Amino acid sequence: MITYLLNSGICLSVLFLFYHFVLRKENMFAFNRYFLLVSLAFSLLVPFISLPSFFPPIISSGQNATIEIREIFINHDIQPSNDKFLVADPVISQPISGFNTMDWYGVLILVYTLGLLFFLVKFIFQILGMAKLIKSGVVIQKEKYKLVLLDQEIMPFTFLNYLFVNQKTYCGPGLEPGILQHELTHIKEKHSIDILLIELLKSVFWFNPIFLFYKRAIQLNHEFLADRVVIEGSNDIIQYQKLLISKVIGNEFVFNLSSPINYSVTKNRLIMMKKTTSKRRSMLLKIVLVPIILLFGAGLSQSEANQNKTSFLPDFMGKDFESYINEALSEESKYILELEKLDIKGAKAAYDQLSQEEKEELTEFPFLEDDVIETFYKLQKAKDSVLIRINFSSPPEKKQIKLDTWQNWLNTKNLEVTVDGNQIERPLLEKFSPGDFALFEVRGIEKKKFLKKEKFRLTLTTHDHYQEKYIFARKKLHTIIAGYPDGNEAEVLYRIKHILLLPSGEFDQYYHENFLNRALESMLTYEFENYPKKNAIVDIRKSFGINVTRNGQKEMVVISNE
Image (cartoon, rainbow, N blue to C red; front, side, top):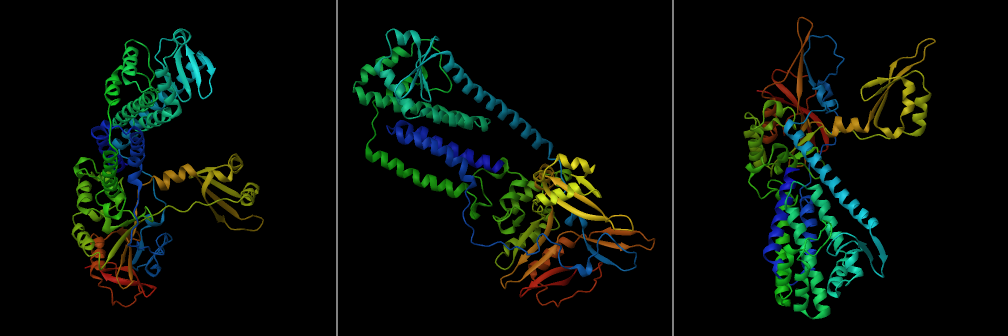
């Protein structure tokens, strides 16, 4: 999000500066109107533009499944034995646990939300204020617009297809033809739509003052457009200028959502009335815009070339650890990190600024620790001979409950029901509907016995709980995958826990301190290329297993831990 705001803000600012110092001074008002609107849309969308990547990501067919080295893995039902076992860490196969975001991040979200609500409510009240103003006046239907006569001392202004005028002025001397034509031009060219759009963007991005400058520029350009129509119709610039000057002397009220006659902009309007721009100069300025647009499209998009530099600002001006991780994620999945896209140096600097508590809350990524980082650098430099993909545990796919299945659950008495981890009485299930749940699981918990039916447990997960538990949860590492030019792959489960049965009968579990670096080194050197297939139980004090896919066949090889 920070990267997006920086990139879009840079683009908005540069394009506005080009307008302010170059285009604003030219008599090409229609083009300027669309330039301002397109600049807004382009700047807000360009960070989402994704150019194609010609290097396909390496994806393991067993990414979401348990790695097939079950010969040396055991589950929770461990039987007492004097043998030594190597097992997968249960955390990997369990759902991702939720976590509380950092305090500062929560404060920022709260502040932004409060600001958004305030400005949206303010915007809505402005709309309602216009509606109330229309109801308070006398509305006269004209051929192409509606005239609203008000008792208030106001200068004529427009909103959508309404023209607001002071009743005494209209019924007395009436509106001057030049003023009337000016205001009707606002209605005809739908200038109010532009103002509503920029007001909405101001509410959403209330913290960014650039949108205020855009609004002022758009409103002023509307005045230039309307003035040009009046002048082309009357061909008497001097008389029209005198009329404008006479209208801006007074204390009449003006409205935020309108394009009123305003003293603060009259000077610019008078200057621009006599301004001319040749066709050649106009075409030249438009041509100059092409490389500018292309520059920002290439510099701020999510193309592969920009994955390590998605902002023109220096790294120390706000880039955080999560931004580096997100920029290196695969276009195919946000749960796959491609090492060649990662700015290791920047990520390392951001990682070192985190406290231990913060590291345990953010995306799990121990590759930036001092004892592993050098091997990580070597792997990235060797991308022509080995490509590394780091897979995070991805959330399970949502399941749809069929109506007949749902009805069967409602009619089953010997059913224990759990919703979001809390057991509920079975009759309470009727308060829900099948669409309320993202996941479900049915298991038998008691076998059928004489005169006793089999008992089942139904576990349900609502959509909100699914989001909290899987989508907004901390990303945890699952597997590291290496791809080689010969088409072979090597895959290692990130967290391999060793379990020993002690003489006392208790189990001891631990991780090898050098396991991660040793696994990366073996992938870098491809030292297991000629290793034979080994499916025996290994000595966990000296080795660990890596899954290797050769010629389409998956097998497990043993790597020395020393």
